[in-house]
Image 1 (cartoon, chains in turn yellow, purple):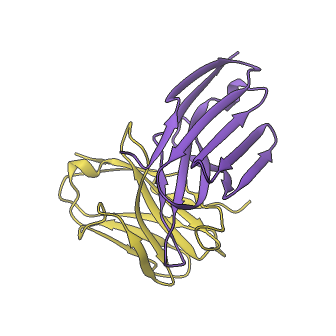
Image 2: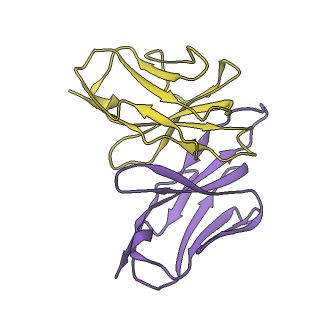
Length: 115
Length: 113
């Protein structure tokens, strides 16, 4: 069964460093999402992406964050200058159709620790 | 006030018991999702519904749009059902396309043998 994959599974970085989290959505999906979950807290929406542009972003998704679909398969989340509070599990998700019609499929997550 | 509230926050039951987890929301939605998060963190989508009822194996999800309420039921619960169950809603939006989910805080379910 097709699945969303994410790399790396874990990343440790120093505060102020740039990180790139990578996701490979399911191949025929057109809608892509990033979420994060700080330890012990609920999952939060970061950004949605469709037709090569951001559809919606949350207040968390400030100028330090960016997303890109550099080729036909990868979907990346970049954090330019990491802060301690960026430590969280980051989930990528994709769906075949618009959000109110199709199930979102989640990747296994990347656990980011900022020291 | 949270847009999505779940109850209970924690639930412990014996194997075989019938389980109900509730979700209430305060915003207009176009769809509601029930998700399962395993101890390792991975998230699996269980149901997406916008009206009525859906059933998959021992899991049943219902939604009442007028009352802004959904329930997830597990029949004949088993220790392998132990996980965090999350309700998430897709809010109404004018723009068609990738729309965000707003998540509840989750219900931690433990089924003891």
